[in-house]
Image 1 (tube, rainbow, N blue to C red):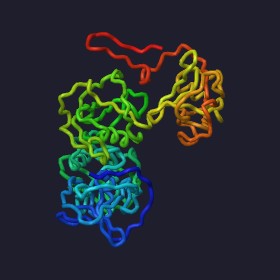
Image 2 (cartoon, rainbow, N blue to C red):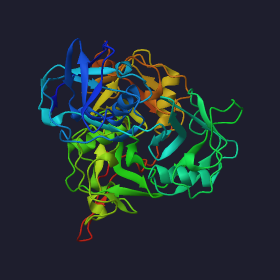
Image 3 (cartoon, rainbow, N blue to C red):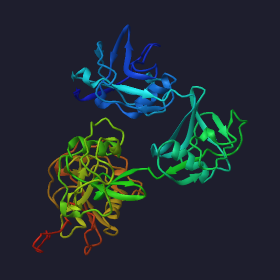
Image 4 (cartoon, one colour):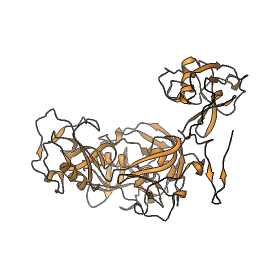
Length: 464
């Protein structure tokens, strides 16, 4: 297994003779090797994802990614294993255009050598900007580059063919507007008219390549195998019950075999930082609908949770009592404490798993109004710039030099110094008094508003 320590970003200049695929059936499949100077080396698959594989296939003019095999399928490398972790976005044309992270410490085995299998087809198909491979803008790989499909008459028959070709289930929607944004690539195909039973888009007639540019927009498709991920009932998009959208229904994930690697992948996929080893209250409610995933065994380098090895979709022996819940480092909460009611007190912010405070330096009326608005506490009454009214806080001073424009809905949407950077003391902790005193606690507030019922029927609650 590769063990990679803390990473740092940097750039690199590779030669014109890398990467390459070795040990496969042809030049478009095999073990990935990268050239540094005059020496070839392999990459660790622990942090290698679909986006980097896509760039390698395009770099080698091998079409689209077909598979990312595990376990050194094409043999173990005999050269060095490079430390680089390529953080590609997927739109680069050369591997060295990708941002790069390198481990400060590195311990690995050639059992984890990266392998890639590309389609090696003159024509390949993909969907872009939809969040997963079964939704997005239709693009075709032709003439060694990805380009657009434009069609003012694009319809469900066309979409059926795309979903079938990509093994994405049935077509749910066809778009002939810029729902997924317009590509900057060339227009490869125009005027596709499918009957709906074709196996490939290029089997439709007519299928005009290299057309004269026109004013029609790019086309998009939504297939039934389209999947989404979210965290719900946790107070923010970065905490709560893990839910997956699949086959047109939202469902949950069972906690059998669930571990921190799986949780980290959820947080990474949602752009919510790292997973915190904090337990969300089980009393915040079980999910409903299908239990889609169970017995996940993620490596951690997958792009999406559903890329992890698991039992078949919907196959489980779980109940909703075992629904997975996750809290990520970017989960944030706001509260006022040590006042007469919840709408006055010292401003405290929950971030990165810890409650901290707000420095009163630069806090003005507009900033405090955002706090009252976020807490649904009515108009602002007053601001306290010293801690004598509501006491000194503890923990980090999370925000300093806050600068709101009054249109923000949360305090962390305002401009400020970076989180945790300040030149304050807790005696400068900000306090706020809002006008409302009889306000019911929001139901979604996970820290203080969770009630549960035992098997005996007795109810437990926390009050005050």
